[in-house]
View 1 (tube, rainbow, N blue to C red):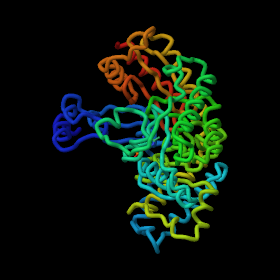
View 2 (view 1 turned 45 degrees about the vertical axis):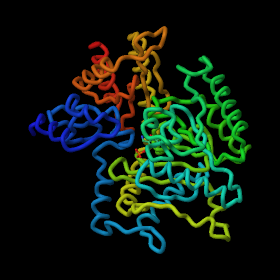
View 3 (view 1 turned 60 degrees about the horizontal axis):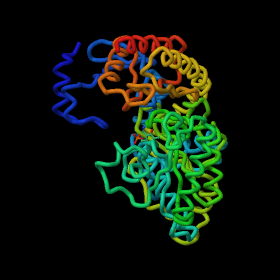
View 4 (view 1 turned 30 degrees about the vertical axis):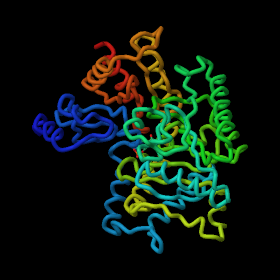
Length: 450
Ligand code: PMP
């Protein structure tokens, strides 16, 4: 076994971690993960636990997906890199694009633009949305609307539409012209409404009101996650996304579905938009597109947007945007193998079935523990428990209590994610009923410790 204390010291002195205070790395050293098989990870101290987080909501097929590993190895031999900038492309990215076109056909999305991850995908959609309106002569449509509690990555555009102050305040000034409306978050909302359907209608009215206030002709796009993820797994009522689609269409505003988490089966549907029967104008993907084995993403573009760009006879539709790694052949090879496995295993069906079991188990834990204020889930394998110190006032829990639950749960066999007062679960979509039980039993031990 490696000397874990020595590694923890080295870690603290040589790198900074995302979403972590740099001074925290020695006081609260991170778990040093050294291996993984199936849905389990092992750490430097020899613990083996079920990964209830699924990497970072991305390892949908688990850690032992041989076809993806083989595809990456073979592609490194065949063509390890070539760009898709002006004048060149590669065979793998063409093959992948045809597959994605088929996969996203029911969502009305017919072109792919490639990126290196989720934040890139969001940035791409925001930029292409503005360009779409400029091609059409609507120069004034530059603003973006989004949901409070929404998470859209950390580039400047994404941070500007982000609905959580933690990811914004220290980085201001952000992009001008970005406005937020209340999320359909039943447990806490400015309307004090607990009926999800009524709340959805009130939030949609807020969207209408904001559009009227800003002027529809100034707004380029509305961006939302079909199920809000990092903000604490907030599933909207089924009427919300269709309602938002209708409002956007009515006002000539593009709808960007940020499906960095929800695409490829996590909700139980093949995409989050399809789950809600919505056709977006752009769909941002990343994460599970390569099962987390290669940094990669794609923005899928709706047919009418494609037409506007491709029929432009001026130079307005020339795309002045892209990344060195757009259409990376190794990423494309990984994504092809990943998509084949995703479809072959019908992981969306297992996500729905195991998700129901996990949600039911969490509700049971919630009912037995006063500090659980809200349990959210019921839409595939994304669930959360929001912890409070007082159920009546809904005062948030202290950090130490959540950290203890996380630690004891880990010691008892499951990795869970803590985000503010929320415990978030997003395990691989291939986990079994027994794995679900392992997570629940470990969590029960975690709660028993506080
Ligand atoms: N959008 C959503 C909905 C996300 O959940 C994330 C990452 N959690 C991102 C964008 C950013 O993706 P990345 O971290 O790959 O840049």
